[in-house]
Amino acid sequence: MGATGSADAARAAVTNLLSDLVGERLEPDSEVVEEERAGADLNTAMAWLMRSFDNFTHPVDEVVDAYAQLCTLTVTARRLARAARFLANDGVDPGTGERVLTEPLARRVNAVMMTCGTYDAAGQFAYDVGFPCTSGVAGAVMGNVPNRFGVCAWSPPLDRAGNSRAGRAALHMLSERLGLSLL
Image (cartoon, rainbow, N blue to C red; front, side, top):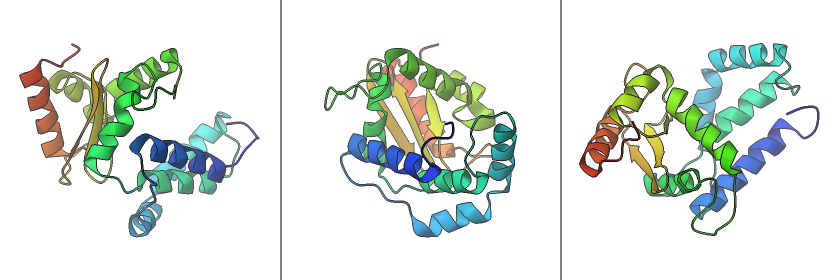
């Protein structure tokens, strides 16, 4: 991010963007923020590593806190699927027609989601589901089927990799029944 802006400003910008995409103001769940802060050792270590490579210059604790707040935004599965639509539409929000990301950047985000958006299970997700997905600590799995739609499944029990067990099964079934796999 460089020396301009702040971690708090970046968090606010992402929160505003997501709020616009889902159509309502999103706020972090304060109880879950505290849980994320208490268990942030690995995220803090990774942030120090990224900082050592000059990937950001802001204080690590501010960056990790902003990340914790973004990870705990309260949203429904339907609205999270709506937020993913722009990634399925080459970076353009189909609800408003506004460009959120350039087409090449939207492709890059989809590639990152496909290859590591579901942690150590990304390869199995790619095989089972066949379209870009990303997972959250609360049990949501958000994905998008390029040139079609955004999708979300939510069920809290997580597997060893930190992904929703039932969400993965539901997206696999959806992909199989509708022939959505890109692979």
